[in-house]
Image (tube, rainbow, N blue to C red; front, side, top):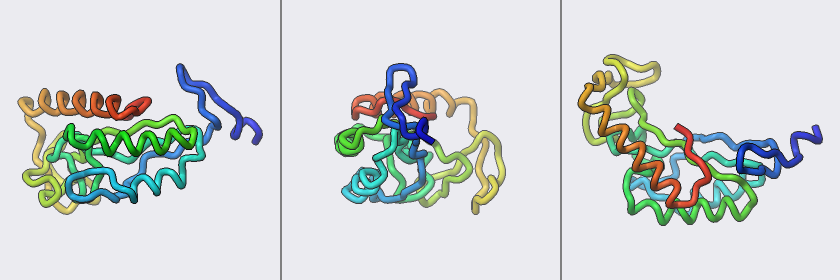
Length: 162
């Protein structure tokens, strides 16, 4: 058990323990996808672990699963994300964020339009059928992931999870 609570180095990062808080759908944002004080308090309460991976953040509005999901699709969100990162890092945790597109789990209401996934049909647990992602939609989606990763690093995250 002592190894569980001892420092651990992964590449350039030394974690204060081998405990990791995985990304979870906290759904604490407003409809803009912005970080708020509820987010910060939630993560600070759990930031005594070696690594914190912030919840799935949508890279484009069409990939938002719920209206109160965290976003990273807009430059205006970087300052709030920076506040979150600074608060978690102040507790000693290496901090990353999960970049996401909800695919077939997206709802039209949350995404503001059609639902796309790797293939057409229902995803288990979804209430609406998805349309197959078209070839022409792939490059813009990849570009949105790249832009989201750049925002994450601008906000101070140590890594991104895709």
